[in-house]
Amino acid sequence: MAGEDGTRGRVTKRRERTRARLLAAAFGVFAAKGFGRVSIEEVCEAAGYSRGAFYSNFATLDELFFALYRDRADLIAEQVAGALAADGPGLDVPAAVDRVTEVLLLDLDWLLVKTDFLVHAARDPAVAATLLEHRARLRRAIAGRLARAHRHTPLPAVLGGADGAAHAVVAAYDGVTTQLLLDKDVDAARAWLRQLLTALLTDGGTPAAADPTAPVEPAPQDRIAPAEEDSPLQGASPLQEASPVQED
Image (cartoon, rainbow, N blue to C red; front, side, top):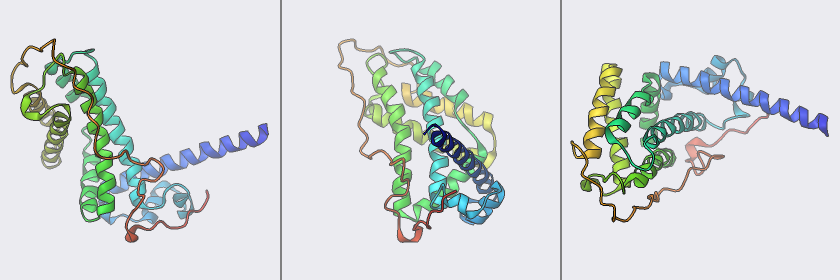
């Protein structure tokens, strides 16, 4: 039994390495050529693997992309949540915004890949639904932190609470990164994002004093169900049927 366990461990580690190399290779090819112009064969060639190795890890290029997206979205969510949590129960908005804009991922290659895939998803309702679920995870992380701080640091009433504020923060990020794709000025993007987030979360100035008797707003419940981790494209359209999986 011990020998079998060791063999399974080696196989698992080998498959993890294979998956990681496929993801890294795909990211490079997607960034260079555009998502819609890349084939599975090109990803395999860049990674140094056969199609069998690809299908042992992913059913389609869409599924591979969602694995990349999940990794990047989780990283951004951790960065934002960590920056917002540094103030304890309250929220020093200017300081938190400074921390967020300093650490936030602004990778031009990733923005190119993500934008290509956004266009692809816009033409396929099943893929669009899955992409919306992944974006909702990021909003939930931001909204949860803003809701916990709301008693100590009131949000502008026009945003309608923590959930609305989270939507506004993500929209600001989307807008700034669109400009960044065109002018390639990362420093200007961080400065503009800092101004936008400060204005959004403070009505453009210093937040009003908190009401200590006000009830704490509960963390919002997103209307979109969490994405299925094991099946990123569950319910995909017939055009995206998975090819038969071959074991590595």
